Length: 229
Image (cartoon, rainbow, N blue to C red; front, side, top):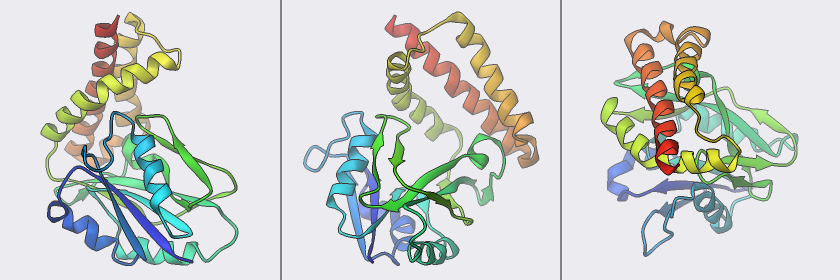
């Protein structure tokens, strides 16, 4: 029962060694590069991940990005989890880690995503903020996947510029057009949810900054929507 790790990246392997070293326990590591000579992203993350699934030889597949790290505890838990016949997939927490501090609250501290599943359990849907849609029972892993962010603002602004137009396009497909109400209400609601309801304030200044930046991301998507109209 082999384990394949699929890593999505647009970097050279030397630039994300912590990620590569953290998946050394797997039987196979597949790098899916956003490059014309490999498998270009073309604005579709689901297609990239599904391409990785098609290349995997293991019975189980782990999806990892080039800025994520699997701890030794999580690696041990994964190896134990796949020996069970109970589940077809497992969800886990993906925690942001800035300057060594782990954000345990807010939206990023409470969201659970499927990153481990049997190869034939399902496929990814939605081009951006893609979801692994699987059939069968889904278990839950205790140990988190760490998302390392060496900087706070610059990478966030880059992500807004990249993801914003893609998000705006998907919202239109989902029947959520631009409106002044969403432009004004959604960012404020997102801040309140992240900082107060989901206890982001317990993460100190980083929790405050994270809640603020998530609101900026929300308003940016609506601006991109407005531009398209």
